[in-house]
Amino acid sequence: MSILWSESQKKRLGELGAKNEQMIIEFDTLKERDSEFKKIEKVLAREGRSRLEEYRKMTKRPPICELETKLINALNNIGFVQVTTPVLLSKGLLEKMTIDDNHTLFSQVFWVDGGKCLRPMLAPNLYYILKDLVRIWEMPVRIFEIGSCFRKESQGSEHLSEFTMLNLVEWGTADEDREKRIEELAKVVMKTVGIEGYHLERTSSVVYGDTVDVMLCDTELGSSAMGPHFLDEKWGMTGPWIGIGFGLERLLMAKEGGRNIHSMGKSITYLNGVRLNI
Image (tube, rainbow, N blue to C red):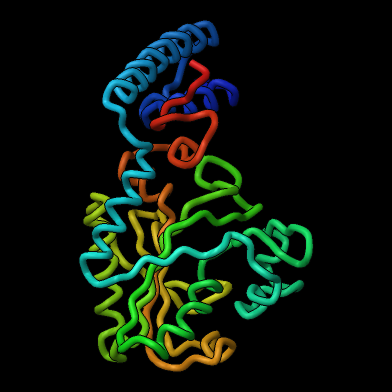
């Protein structure tokens, strides 16, 4: 019977950024496995130190910060305006998104004192801003935000408790152009990140209902919705619109071919994607 990596060995190799082929090696004996583990761990640690030294000399920014700048520039160039909103949300704003005490997502929200929570999504704040901007500005109104969101569900190598979202909304898109516009804006983001071979897939969301997801193989990189939508009336709004949300850490993981999303985001144990306990 073939012998595989132990759970602790597998975890360590994942932290050090082992490649797929290094994670699925089979062995005849435990001695052979443990000897090979020490060799691979040593090589990956040496590669990590080299990357950290290069990072230091080049005075580079964390990849997620560089990606954020690229996305801001790309969206500004096609007429989108950046907004920034508070991280704390009131319970009432979440209820307008149908997330009440009985909702599936309610238990995944980080609640703080006074009926407030750390935002699990950017949408409530964007709705709040849009209800005034569509009154002040000519159509279409194009805005986006990039910022931290928080969910307790986030466990494992593909999820984070704190993650970075890009949400972009175009309010006033002509009804007949909505699906085409989703394709165009997804292409802008994917080109900016440097990801090819993605596709769009129809699915559903517990908040938005029918959605169109941006997929790379079986991995969801982004999710889009369009209106008029049943949520709009809760904000006193009407009219056609489209919106797309992307997780930046997941985009980076897809771009780099990584296995561990924790190395892509805000961290005190990783720098430039390199585990620091090497």
